[in-house]
Image (cartoon, rainbow, N blue to C red):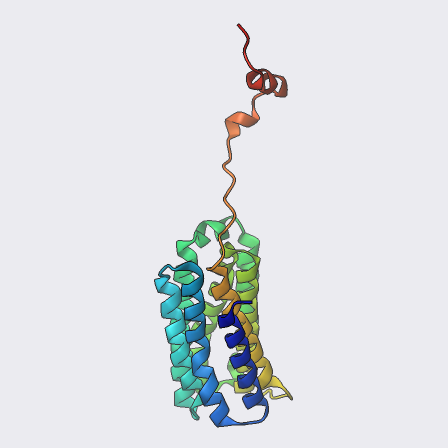
Amino acid sequence: MPPILLAYAGLAALNLAGVALHQELLEWCTKPLLAPLLVVYLWRCTRRNHPAVLAGLALATAGDVALLLPGAGAFVAGIACFLVTQLCYITAFVQQGAVAHLRARPVLCAACLAVWAAANAALLPHLGMLAWAVAPYSLALVTMAATAQVRGPGAAWGGAVFVASDLLIGLGAAGAEFAGRPVLVMATYTLAQFLLVDAFTRTRPPRTTHHPAAERVPPGDRARRAAPQNG
C-alpha cells in the first residue's frame, strides 16, 4: 500500500475514533485533511491534472468543515458544497463517456430514479425547511452514482456507498437516530471518496472495436484469407 494511502487510512481511523468518542477537537484535526490527502494520492499516481475531480475534492473539504459546525445554516452550506462536489464528479464521468454508457442501460437509469424517488418520499416530509436543499442534492448524488459506472466496478461501488452514506445523514436529519449512525456515516464516506478517486488512478480496459462486416465472412473464407499465398 502506498504511504499516502496508509496516511489516509490512519487519518480516517482517527476521525472515526473522534466521532465515536465525541471528541470534536480530534474531528476538526482529521476530517478537513481527508480530501486533500486524496488529491495528493491522485497526483502521485497519475501525474496528470483532473480538474473536475480536484474541484470536487476541494468543495468536499469545504463541505466537511461546514458539517462540523452546528446549526441548520451550516448544514445547508455543507449540502451546497457537496452538491457542487457531485456536479464535479458527474462532469468527470461524463468526460469519460458516461452519457453513452447510460443510454445503453435504461434499466439502470430507471433503478436510480426509483431509488431517488423512494428515498425522497420517505425522508422529505420529516425534514421541514431542509427539504428544498436535500431534494436537488439527492438527485445530483444519485446521478453521480449512475455516471460512475463508466469507470468500472470500483467507481460504481464508490457511488453506491456515497449514496448510502448520505442516506444515513438524511435519516439523522429526519430524526431517525440509532446507535453507531455517525460512525457509519464517516466510515462509508471515507470509503466512497477513496473508491471514486482511486478509479481515476487506474487505466480503463480498451474498448473492443465492433466490425459487423468481419462477422459476415464465412469461417472457411477467413481461414483461406489468413493462409499464406503460394506462388
